[in-house]
Image 1 (cartoon, rainbow, N blue to C red):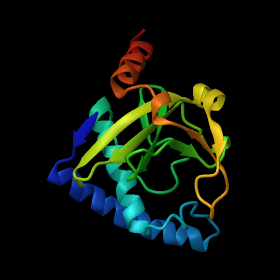
Image 2: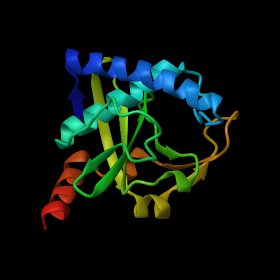
Image 3: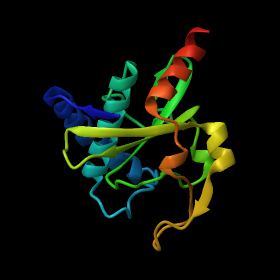
Image 4: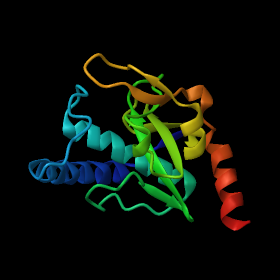
Length: 173
């Protein structure tokens, strides 16, 4: 599902990305490891992509989200009632939902969002429950300069509409 971000949402995303970049710098000085440091993209661009994806999912699901909440989120970006959601983002159209290690999937649900060729449009590809990811993910070598990671292809993700229906049913049932 494609979600268009407003000018205000894009401005908020840029502000948040700048602050997250600065906080990340401080955390790195204290020994925190930036897992995406060798991704080939700048820290600000990675943060901006992530915040835009989080805003898009929150907007789509109708959940509250504070993009100015800083510090490591512990793998739980959003909440739909009592269900936690970890939003992963990419600019690669055929990207997979990837976790470097299964222990990093701490949320109830992981969601993959792809930025389209238009900077204000994010495509929420789908999501997967943690238990299903643990069962279905395959360890793959995605890049020569990184360790193998656990991956689930887009074809195994549940559409955001079905995901929303399931979350809503579980929240109110």
